[in-house]
Amino acid sequence: MGNYFSSGKNKEKAQKDDDSSSVPQNNAQWQQKGHPSKRNRHLTANARFYKNEMESYPDGDFIENILTKWKGDYDRLEKHHGYIQWLFPTRGAGVNSYAQELKSHEVEAIMDDPDAFDRVLRSYEMMLDFYGMELSDKTTGEIRRAANWKVRFQHLNGSYHNYLRITRMLVFLEEFGYEHYKRPFVEFVLQEAMEHGTLIQTLESCKRFWIESIRIEEDRQHLKDYVHRMETSYASLNQNHNAELFGRADDMVKKSKDCSKENDHESLGNPEKMSKAEWREKIKTLKLLEEDFSSHRQTELDQYRQGYPGKEDDENMRENAQFYKNELKFYPDGDLIETILTKYKGDYARLEKQHDYMQWLFPLREFGMNFTAKIHLLQRHEIKAIMDDPEASGRVLRSYEMMLDFYGMELSDKTTGEIRRAENWRDRFHHLNRSYHNYLRITRILKFLGEFGYEHYKRPFVEFVLQEAIKKETLPNTLESCVLYWLETIKSAQDRKQLRDNVRKLVTRYLSDESVVPSEKDDNVDISNGNQTGHRRPEETEDKAEDSLDVRANDEWREKVKKFS
Image 1 (cartoon, rainbow, N blue to C red):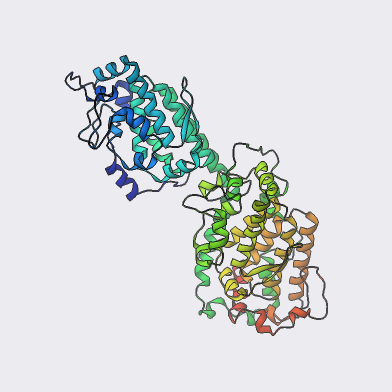
Image 2: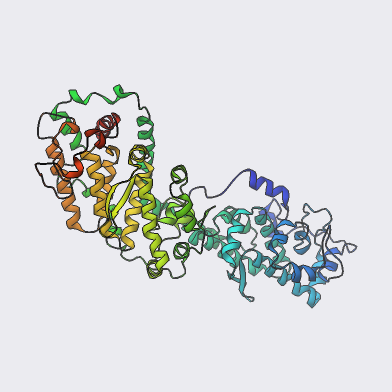
């Protein structure tokens, strides 16, 4: 499993801000024997506090006031630290020097007093509410989401000192006969973190401390086995679904570094001296002239094209629909979708450098690379909910149009999905030729379109890119991804075959004479239908300089051919 946790200074600071000593350092000894009892009958502050006879201090209050007036005052509960060691005293000392370590005679005194003992559970419930949770069964200790869970989970993901508070709280529960409450709490958090991705930042503390606070070895092992199964499952799924994508990403980084040498044209070779046979060999390495040049990608995309056979719908997962209805911000550290579609649009630096929004804007029914989003797999009922909501369904198309603009393209026909160059195409094409991780994004976008009734948009997009990559030489670096991945997202076998045939015809046309450089060829092949028209279409009567970005276009094509080898 990857590193899901924000590390370093925030957590180090949190350890200084709150109590870090509520769990003994020697977990094994504590689990077996408990903390050594230090009976001192003269120390009764905890019992008196729980009997509502004295205030917590410094700057504290009576426990009854805390449990009534402080409950729901989340800002106060977050920023005030002194009350925690009074509300959840343990056998270990904490950072509040005014608070007293819990003594065995105090435990007995509190449990013998009905009102005081009732406050033990009320204290736990108040903090659960603060964390966006509630008890669903006071007998078993089962936990469920509270009505305020979205906002409170978002807070808990970034409030690391609360993880120390939770450790203290769990240790405290055991002292008062609620040991059996620990496992349901930990199970709930693990499920939210590992299955729903809502409390992902808590996972490290949950594995290292909260599981270990449980005395019952069988319960601890059960939870550890669950974590192991989930991690193994993620690793296997990532390997099956994303291994090649990660490999492509690594390769793309290398290619990007190679392409950054814009002025070093000599390093690209001299294609004018390349023979027709040499050119053909370069093209053959991509298998563009072979009948099955994309067949080795079939297995990877079969599941998608067949609608993920056997995948069950999880009715409890609603995050994608809530996001598209503008009810939920993406996380970590995200925005509402309306903010993205208005304020992010045209902010190309932000769209390029920020990555976490992509899997929220284009969710799929398969795993991705953003851990917090990838476990929000798109569900069939969410697709229906989004498509049944006019505003939410409108955002599907707006999301696509925003990314087209980012890539220098625009829809020329919203009915057919036809694409044309946008006004900013030169700069954006130049960027797209060197921003290889965007090729992975485009694969995701095309798959997403197919889930929301825009399957017919894919072919026009692929045809447009092939025209630009092969005929006009403006997007040469996209060619490999276009023919091996984007084309293969199209569900119609007939459309895929036609496009492969058209690619072969165009490549064959380019290899039909002794000239090697594509730009010197007859430009009269229409990739969209495979015809050789014998004359240029009206939009192709522009000066040749309009069809090529600049002198680098030919160099990019030549470099692309070199990379295929």
